[in-house]
Length: 199
Image 1 (tube, one colour):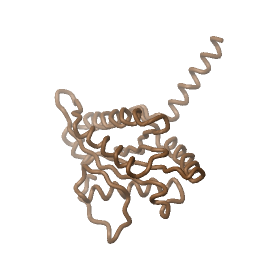
Image 2 (spheres, helix red, strand yellow):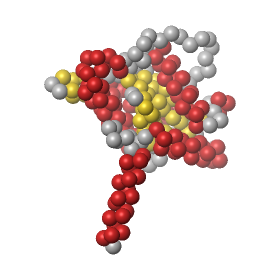
Image 3 (cartoon, one colour):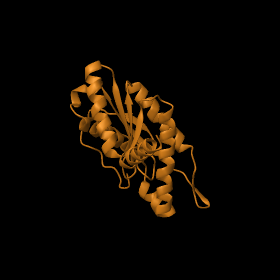
Image 4 (cartoon, one colour):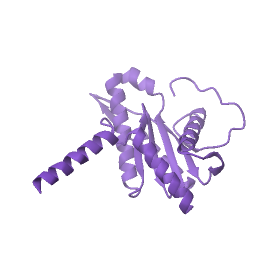
């Protein structure tokens, strides 16, 4: 029994190493995408909604410039903690991941666009009001959050790639509106606006 327990513990440890980002404690990109594929298949069969949130830190380069890479890492960990705490209260199927760099994502099975925006705003306002300790200083960050949702955006979504693309486009809409806000994907009516560098 002890040997079987040791094997189970080791398997669990290896699974975590393969699926969880060591810095933030959120799921890695490849695992998040695999779950998105599964949930999208399920949503098409059941007819239940599925939403995705994509966020990144506004002017992350300025955070690094002011506080150094230690401050940038602290901001990433602080944002991840807020996202993780928020998602844990949403239900068993909701999950959060680190998509890359300062981009974080949340998968919301059986949640429509209104719920996605509600969760996006909850995360955004929580991080805005949270000071992040960096040595003897405190960093304040804001985020922009984009949402895609099925079946609302069904005409644009044929794969998990489309979920990600639309959420990123919605995030880009937020950047154009001045950042520190949330948005659903909207069909563009003209050329993309020029956004100052630094996201």
